[in-house]
Structure formats: structure tokens, C-alpha cells
Length: 322
Image (cartoon, rainbow, N blue to C red):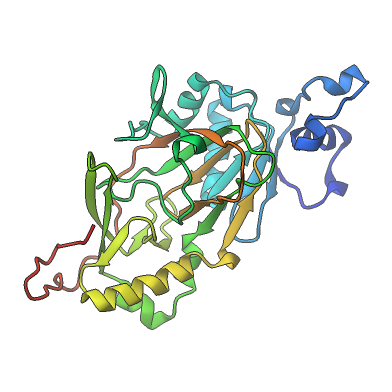
């Protein structure tokens, strides 16, 4: 299968253009008299089509049926993921829960989330329903409070509000590369505590990860701290850690290192948790429902620690406030 990067509609044939328009909400809700135009376009017979979402990360992908990905297609999708970090499939071929799990499983074993609600009969698919409080409008990487955070997430939106409810992602390779050389040197060998405590007290998990993570596939370094779960750089005094983390969060969340996607119902997003953060924009009045699987990961790796953990008077070196 060949891949084509699309930069303008001039490069597209009529069939591709119609398939693209089909994925757009206004087109999908039009009353079209021509019955041939009401039938789903056969986009999966075409070569893989890729359209970058922003200059920093993210791409829309057409021409692959996620419900029946063969080995060649999977390799191409995986390569695109390593390059773009976020892939969105606007016309996902009516992905069923079984196909959703099967596609996610191509990347590795799926995790069972410790507390989020599950889809009936599918314990590895979590349901993210805004009516049930699922509004993750803080920058984060999924489940970094685990010793082995997931390597990837696959999210399908099954219900979208009339407007709003976009998702943003941020490129953490670029965040690391934006730091000065002295700052990078300072961060090498430091670790941070990541913590989550469920509001009702039924779940608590804490993990220690390198502040700078090396991607096991690409070998590139990225920042690995996030505003939702990272609590403390363990080699620094609390005041130093607070100031440093606030700076790193600002670098990580800078708009110039992000992409933003306007969902269409049924679209599927796949992203690499090892080098991205994401943010669900809470700017809508209606209901937003998604289904997500996450792929079990391995322990994040970085430089060997160069200093011991800072111990303040009367506190353990690993004490972290909830």
C-alpha cells in the first residue's frame, strides 16, 4: 500500500474529494437527491491518504478500514504514528466494539482501567461520558500514575455536541527541544512523582518516572511531566520543584507545539502516550460520549539519576501531597 501526503485539493481526484467531503458533518447531514451520493464512498479501495493537521503533530488518515487492518496496513499506520504522534481516522468504517478492541490489540495487550466505567460486555473499553463527569479539561498524559503507563490510546467519539468539544494534543519531543541546553542538562537524571487519588477515596496510585523520557522506538527524548498528575521533582526542594514544574508545564502546553481536532461522530483518534499530552476542550453545552482503549506499556526510561532525593526536615524523601 502506498502513502500520499495531501497538501491541497488540487492533488486529489474526484473520488478522494467526495470521500473527504463525506467525512465532514455538513456534507453528512445534507439531503442529497442523487442516490449514488448517499452511499458511503469506497475510500478503502484507495491508497492511504494522509493530511497533516498542524505543523507540529497530528494527521488525518483515509483509506484504511480499522475493522480489518492487514499486516501491511498496520505497519504503515504504525510508521505514520511514529512520525505524526496523533492519527485521526474521520471515516472509521463503523468501528464496532469488537473491532475497536482488535485494532488496539495490534499495538499490544489492552489494559483494564482501574476505575473508569466500562462498556457493557467489554471490560477493556472505557466509556467517557460528559454527563457522567468525563471532562478532562486539564493537560495530561493517560495514567502516568502507573508504574507502566499505557503506550497508546484509541478513542472513538460516538456522540458529539453540536459545536465545541474538540481535543488538543501537544508534542513533547518539541517541548524538550525548546528548552535551553543548561535546562536540559539540569533535567537529565531527575525523576518526578506522579499521583492520582480518586475523589471518593476508593483508589490511590503513585509512580516515579524520569522527567525526560527516551522513546523506545524512535530514540528521541521528550518531556514527561503533566499538570494533571505530576506532583514533585524528587531531587529538588519543594519550592524549586514547584517553580520548575510550572515552567515545564508552560513549555509543554504552548500552542505552537499543539494540534486541535474538531470531531465528527464515529471518528477514531490514535495517539502515542510516550511523547504527547492531550486536553479535552470543555466549551460545549450538549453531550459528548467516547469509547477508549489503552495499550499496556512498559516502564519509562531516561538517564540514570545523578542525585539522591531531596529530604526536607520532618518529611520523607518520597512524601508527596495529595
